[in-house]
Length: 165
Image 1 (spheres, rainbow, N blue to C red):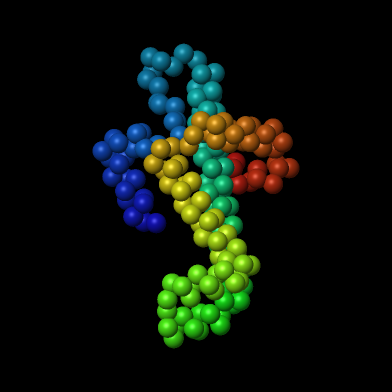
Image 2: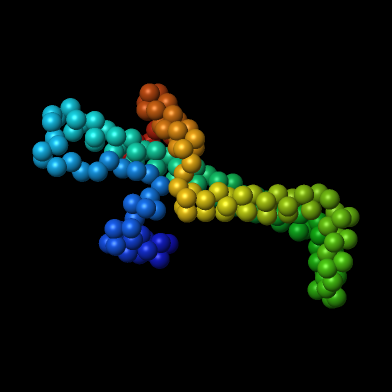
C-alpha cells in the first residue's frame, strides 16, 4: 500500500498525475478569474461533490473486494472439502486428467470454485480498467446520480456518513 502512495507522489511531482487521474477536479482560479463569492462557493461545492463521488467509488471497490473475500472464505472451503478425497489422490499421483475427472464428477464443487475464481478475475479486470483508463463516463454519471440522491436524502441514507465528511 505504501508503494502505491509513493508512486502517486512521484507522479504528482513529475506533473503526470492529471493524465492518470480518475476524476477531473476543478483547477485553482487566479485572482483575476474570481468574479464573485458565488463562483467560489460553486467551485468548492464542485470539489466537494467530486470528492464524494470518489468516496462512493472507493466504497464500491471495497464492497466488491469484500464480496470476493466472503466467497473465498465461505464457498471455496466448502468446495475444496467436497474434493478432499481427490486432493488426497492428487498428492499421491498428480495428473491433469485426475483434476478434470474430479471437477467433472463434482459439479457443485466445480461451480463454487469457478464462481470464486470468476468473481476475483472480474473485480481485478474492472479495477485495472478503472486505474489504467479511468472510470467510463456512464459509470461516472451513475456515481454522480447516486451521490446526488444521497445528498438529497441526507443523514437518513445509510451511505451518508461514508461519503460526507
